[in-house]
Length: 132
Image (cartoon, rainbow, N blue to C red; front, side, top):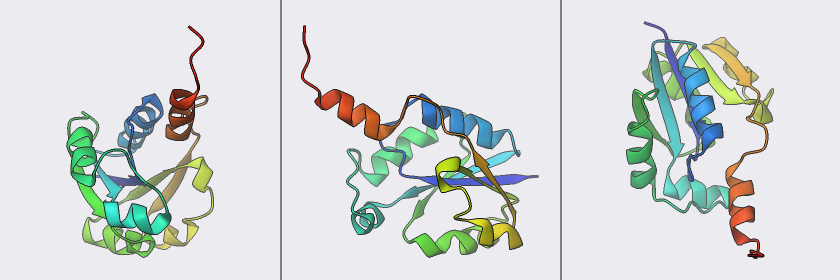
């Protein structure tokens, strides 16, 4: 069985996330998604709308996802790869080159992001005054 892992906050789930999950799952038979814990988000200076538990519940309902685990620190990726016997790490290409050191443990693939959608864009668009 070929196992794949990806990482993210996955706060406000959108088509870009679904595309990433679908494409990541296509690289193997079993997809593990590591999502930032609330404390890790605070460490990164990010604030998620949904709590870790809520984001975990949402992702567990996505058909491409087989398992959801917490990410507590940047440095845990190597341990996750070993512990979960991961064959492929998949990340968005905005992280290109950042995880090349993990190629010693598994295949590392950077996928192009979905054009025109991001959590940041959604939050910005929602805060724009409407002109109805």
